[in-house]
Length: 58
Image 1 (cartoon, rainbow, N blue to C red):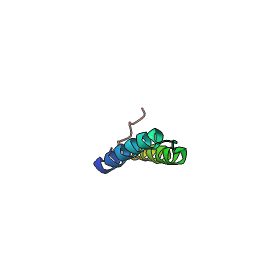
Image 2 (cartoon, rainbow, N blue to C red):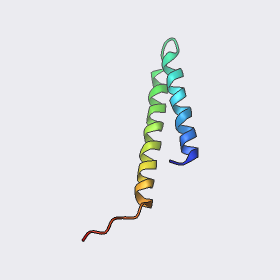
Image 3 (cartoon, rainbow, N blue to C red):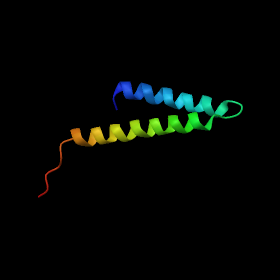
Image 4 (tube, rainbow, N blue to C red):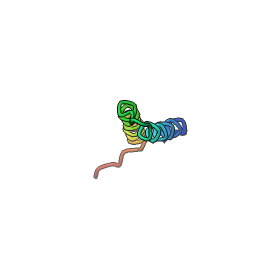
């Protein structure tokens, strides 16, 4: 995973904790940050699969 994506993912994770700890909890903020984290994970997985050389079938 790119270091920039890892930093953004860390910030989103910390933001999720703050969103849940508020009184009352801000669920919109939590789910928005959760969606952002999932998008980053999916993007990095797809990028990693495209850059790896494909195994030859024999």
